[in-house]
Amino acid sequence: MTTAQPPAGPPLETPRYGTASLADLGPSVLASLGVAGEPNILGLPDTRRACVLLVDGLGWQALLANRAHAPFLASLVEASTPITAGFPSTTATSLTTVGTGAAPGRHGVFGYQVALPGDGAVFNHLRWTADIDPLTWQPCRTTYERAEAAGVATAYIAASAYEGGGFTRASARGSRYVPADTTTELVVRAEAALTAADRAYLLVYHSELDLLGHLHGVDSPHWRHHLGQVDRLAEQLAAVLPADAVLYVTADHGMVDTDPQGRIDVESDPDLTAGVRVLAGEPRARQVYTRPGAEADVLAAWRERLAGHATVVSRAEAVEAGWFGPPPTVDHELLVRVGDVLAVAHGTTALVAPRRERVESQLVGHHGSLTPQELHVPLLRSGPLSGLGPLG
Image 1: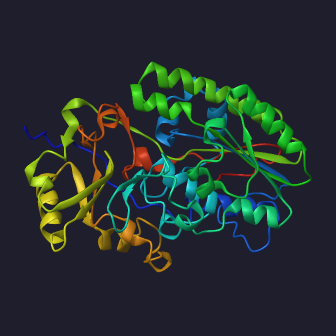
Image 2: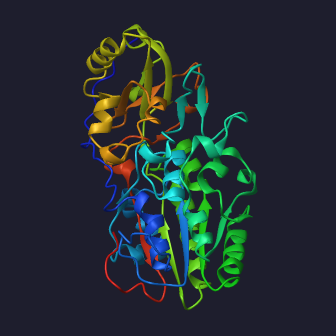
Image 3: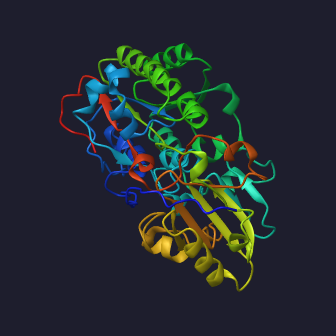
């Protein structure tokens, strides 16, 4: 196959676990609600009711670039600073990070797809396999369980299709699941949940912006016009807040638009398949599981072949760099789920596997890497306390 020209790209960053990340959001919200023992790392103001609107795919940089299409959200930007997702910067990892208040190295959901220990079958977290126990696979107590134990009523408001699924049970167990299949229903259900108890913690999840980014790209009229609908959703949620409530708007990741010239086929190139047992991950964050004794050779080959296109590291190097959380907090028993070799894309590169991942390999927008476009997400605040200085 032809070798793509190395694209110019921004430097990679390390997630800001413990200072300004999605792992710090849940505990900070619980602390603001008076739950004892939860650290308020983000310095959120005290309140009795908190609603978190998590918009799938709403990256900080994309929001800034398109603020004319989102006047309500734009009005909150100046009083905020971005926080980061974790690694990989992808939905399965981020929703679990928010739902547990823990970095990936503690909750064990290491991306879109991983290889199962033992048989090596590829396991997709968003298409849960029935024989994987969610409570065992994701061992951390959730923020919803901790809130309920402290007398704070919780609600997880999202599409009915996700209710009862394995991933929902892994990432959001302990919450009261409230199905809502339209933006209007999201607002109606949130308004009811906010007033149903004396103290409340809600997470409202909206997914369509991410889908449009994947299909058409962030730099597309589809994405921009739907951002306007998201803006209206956030404004409506803010309008139904009780006097003692706060709305936070955040996201699970941003996105990078790719193009056909930036796609590298990593399942057909003989330089990249030698010594490889299983290929998992996703086009912006590949996880490579090697045959016994082949890790060093695979690492060297991937580094040479992808020079200029991706940063390639060993599992140990990724852990030491803090990609999955501060190294002392990483659960090493869970690391067997992570690839022996990791490749995180630069610029507009997509590391595709067109035979096994036909649909994913044709998408325009991708995420998972550690570029600012993918890693930085907003943390916006609206409510009676919204004038209390910058967030993050």
